[in-house]
Image 1 (tube, rainbow, N blue to C red):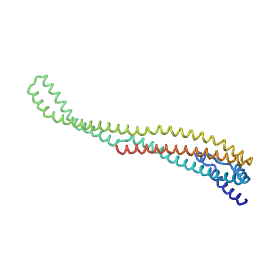
Image 2: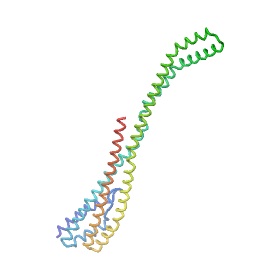
Image 3: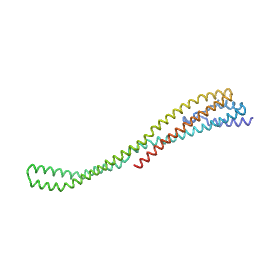
Image 4: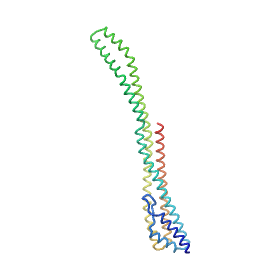
Length: 272
């Protein structure tokens, strides 16, 4: 019997270490030192079957709390990764094709500037034709028209080149707008997922509040050295922690969905 008590106390000591207070998002339950001491006495005073059941439930609770901690870490890690990726991705969307846009705009500006002297000369020449026409100077008018006709082809080619550059810029803007819209529409899929995560967190919060009752029951039971009530309280705690873990897994799955959306948006960016 002495060896049994020593072994049980060792198990309970390890359990206490596992249940020690940790970060806010870690295990939702931690047994106090005084309750643990009373629990040791209750287990030692119980019959063989009840003592074994208490030990089994404590082992189960330990495993569940460890699992809860692990899921907390996984959720935090993936959530942090997603929250860092989203603003970076949105910044990339804003910068889609800025270099190409600048290049095309510069080409339009440079091409217009290159032919500006030609256009000015052609305008001046046509003004002179109108003046000669008003003066009824047929010889001057004929000479000026010959000059204008010789410049007309060059002016038409210049205007065509400018239109080509402007059309290239318009086509780029249209294509880029479509790409930006496509990626942004993909990222909109994140919003409903976040709503689902908030709903799951609300459920988690409610479940964690429910721990108060079995926790208080456990404290009262071990103070009264009541093995049956202790077993019931430990069982209730395990059930609640198991439910918490189930909803943690749902939250993690939703974070994975967000990660998938981000990956899809990145693929669309790279394919632009």
